Image (cartoon, rainbow, N blue to C red; front, side):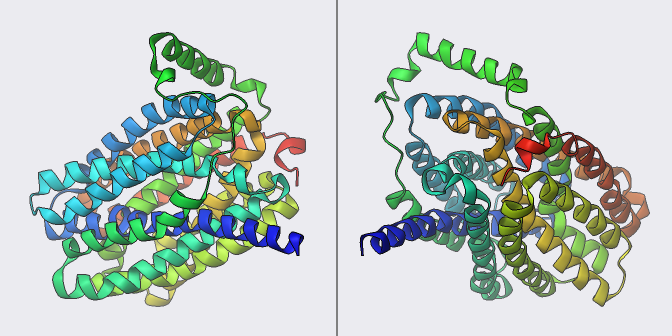
Length: 417
């Protein structure tokens, strides 16, 4: 009975933690990838580069502060307070997106909301080690992402009637509410481990401690070679995520411009793709625990190259449905395997700091990917649809370089099951 109750408790905590992935997906899909970007570029007729700038500014501040806060959270042994604060911060400004039709205010509110959402993910990821056995990190990570994609499907079903009847902006307030509701189990029930020595967070912000924090950060950044494979993993992540983030940001615009889909058809395609994302999350988590994280991540990068090739040359309806399914599987696998691989390469006492560094690289890649896409599309605009196709095709270069760095990871560390 005791063992059964312990298993139930562990299962409940895993579910509570995983539901945050579901909650976060309401923002990631509805705001970042679909309705907000469509509101800016299609409804308001603003060039994509302005959305790229707004996104890039928010990510720049996440990249800088995420590193520092990662060190602070490790020093204090507390990650939950940061998760709670930045989640609620993001939710408030997500709701405010629906309050004004002014495009400038919209881009500002979006940048602030995205800042809060993205920086909260650092501490959410770091809390994974509190609930998952080291040999089942891939599986638990996969459960989280699987629920995340379930949330994406749920978000699309709940908001589609709203966007059809009242337009894109009408979805922003409900998105904030749903983000709040589904994040509550994680915010309430997931706890920090009791640190060996309790340290007040305010105490850490004193002058001497701030200097120590930056010294620790500098050591982690410049001595990353001490953690076998970490530098190559970060380099691979940067190049791979440049391409992935560009796809996430502009996939709905690509479907509209290249395939000529209307808003209902775009939503249907994303629903279809998201179902396959759930499949990708489920199988990639278990598979990576079995065959190793280096092999799994390499396979994911190769799948992305195939996605870009098919996406760039797809012309008929059957082709883009196939591309949607393949992108869903690959995108779901990307987050599951990369999160598990990052944890495998990091010592547990440095997990918050390493995730801060990993997310810093990811955020730099998001800025680079967004600006790359916006700039190339702008330059190739005289070529019409083919400008978009060539831009997508050019993302293969990022994946190829990333794959080279992945193959340099040490087998004994990256493939440990």
